[in-house]
Image (cartoon, rainbow, N blue to C red; front, side, top):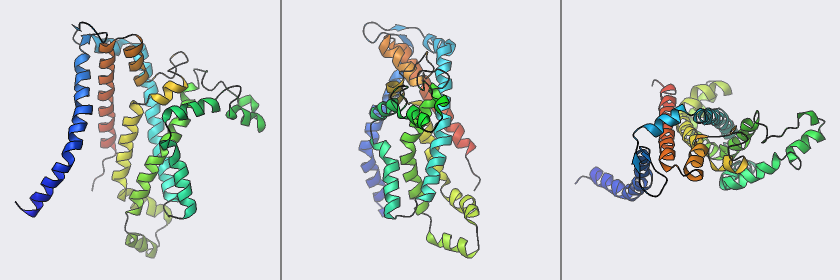
Length: 290
């Protein structure tokens, strides 16, 4: 066996346990869920085969489309909120001074906290009587802008975007900082000698060289947004009047509140399909010609 073959075999053996765990705990449950979606099943007892009836019901349910619309708002807020903000912070915090390290840790801190804790914190911030947001609006003379932030169906979905974006900026910032620091200093020196402006260097040198990292961040944003659940469930539970219902909360309510495990499995399979379509579409749109 050649040296290269031995290295490949060693890598394969090292990856095998993680791959087996991934297949057993991720891939297999996805196919089991798709299988249960063909049955009328309450979680216990006999399963009745009904074919595509669960999928047809989901596609004809107005609440499913409302949850889908809200999820697209979350996806858009994540892709066009988290990624640009994280990229700007990464550009500003690329150097490793003590102050910049402190700011990095501060930005990353929400990711360390539980989403349930973040939901509780922001629930208090948005509270109409004791919340700090309405208090600050009163303090600066903008009391007319005070709102029932999580109780008004017209704005509740948009109010949730702030904690959702704030929670997940940190990991993307760290990814972009690592990508920017991997660019050879010689390239920066050559750009400086050639008199390249900072904006031109950003869009002509740095952005193209970290483009693959940006694509990965977009994939993570889309997949994470479509399975968003805990923060929304803690803050609003999908209300008021289903105004903050997402596909994940819609699936959860149908599965565990009304015990329609077959229908919930069909919805979860639909979430996987939608995620794959959006990820494939985003990667196609972001494809660059070498």
